[in-house]
Amino acid sequence: MALNELAQGLRPAAEGVDWFEGLSEDEQRKVLRALVEFCGQARACEDDVPESIARSGIRPTHTPAVMLTKWRFGMAALPAYELAKSFRLLVALFSIADIRRRILHCADGCGHEWHNLSDPQRDAT
Image (tube, rainbow, N blue to C red; front, side):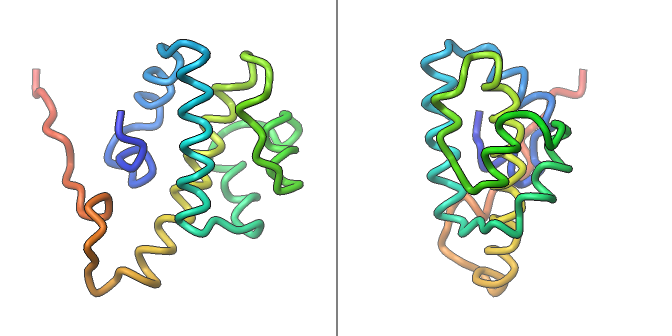
């Protein structure tokens, strides 16, 4: 599963969550660590948090949302039952930051291969 495709809306969020939930717990934690890194590279900021919570569909009172509100990213250390919520939240944060980065820094084109993805081929059956 390409996390960039999820962030850019080229794959449905539900497909991403299904993929994530099919991973082992150790793999899920690795994906969360990668998402935190991607959020940093995309220059996510604290002002993005309320929108990312709203987009993720998790409640602002869920532990991952509370952590992000305090700008804490140790979500990979949360109990297993919080990992899918963390995934949804971090994909939303990554998406918001990446969209802004593409508009501000890559609007005239760029060499970032992940900004030049095309819609994945879908089986019409």
